[in-house]
Length: 231
Figure (cartoon, rainbow, N blue to C red):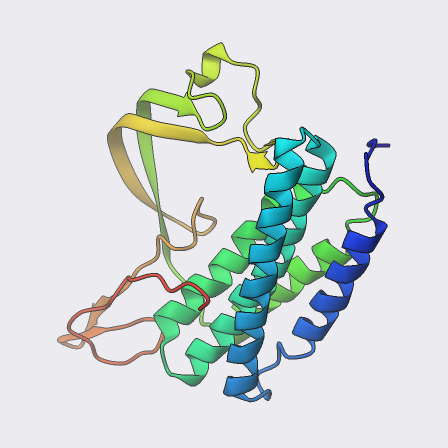
């Protein structure tokens, strides 16, 4: 059992209450304005949590800092889900897809690093997001790049990942260890069904002399790939 310097119970109780309120609004029938207000509320809560994490880091309280990382990731996933629904209502499907993928992606490190015993609720929520993908969007075609890494660094200590003890995907004092690729040679790009990133998708296809967006089947000349954060 991870040893905490302070009781995590009140922090978790507050998160569970806020998450329950937010998830009540994560349905397509809920008014767009209500969902946008909830996104703003979540953003304010995240700001409070990040300040709290900074205090934990300053006091070298790693279990608490890691717990806050997981809480932030979990509540931000709900904000991304809500933003997806808002963009669907605005007929901005590419942005809706981006936010759904972000919601799914952010939960991965949370599940792997969750410091408390029960991850069933988070895993169930991830399945909900996967169901959104299946029910709200058509099947996608994706791409994956193959490359040779020539230079990389650890996001925690900036050393070569082969020369440090930090493990990719693990939390250290509330920060996720990642491998930052500084230099690489691209080998090839392949069409895949299970990509490393679902944002690497086919944006347009040629059919019947027209350029079609495969997500909406609308004729298009140019497709924006600009990502959209909850705001």
